[in-house]
Length: 359
Image (cartoon, rainbow, N blue to C red):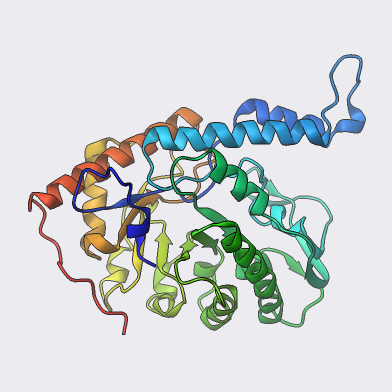
């Protein structure tokens, strides 16, 4: 589905480089404190510190979601997200809501970072909606279109201990059924931009068929006006390109700024036939790129696809950055996109005028 449906009515330029974020955003420190108090409710001395119950936590999450959605709009983003204010870790959050997973404590994943890596101990089952309430709240407070990120079935199968299914493919296929049920509910609720997050994909070069089959099921029976993006990061794209062009998605969202665009040549042959949501600011460093630097990054994307196929975003979720740095990166990114659009309108940038055929 074309990105044109998300063009603001008052957009100043003939060209439109849609600006958005991948998903996560720094959570306000007060939300973190409230969540910690809710988590350790039984250990809180009610005389010294008020106990946080579920209602109080929900109110805090609503407040944070409203705040960050409006912060995205203040930065000028065309499509916004609530910053995933209600979520913890991208696998853990969903595994906690899917029957068949259990948690046995955190494991060390890199550096000093730990992840409460779950195990799949029985057949996975869908019990109740995961994200519809989140989407409906965000849409109710947003003045711009809302994107919904959701962790994909392959990553939900790969980044866990599989103690029940015979193969990763079997688990991913069952999870795809559940994700399809959720995205259908999101579409019924009005969501028109859904992003499937599959960071595990570029780490395993022989699993294209598993991912492709799972995605076919995920998008089955969705309305034609629902835009589907696929976010992939953390890997060697030469392992998965051009096979990913066959996936049933409208957009491929790729991390490239962090690697200084060393992998850009991967996408020159064959022609990139999907929309390219290209990372133009680094989500891993707090240094804020200047508008000029981001414009140069956007021009790199125009070497791969024409303007009608280019979407501008950060490399990945920016939740680990200082909040002020995250905001300034978004603000500069939007300004850079608007200036590039004006230069395209003026004929100051030479690009392909026709998008390559997907056939």
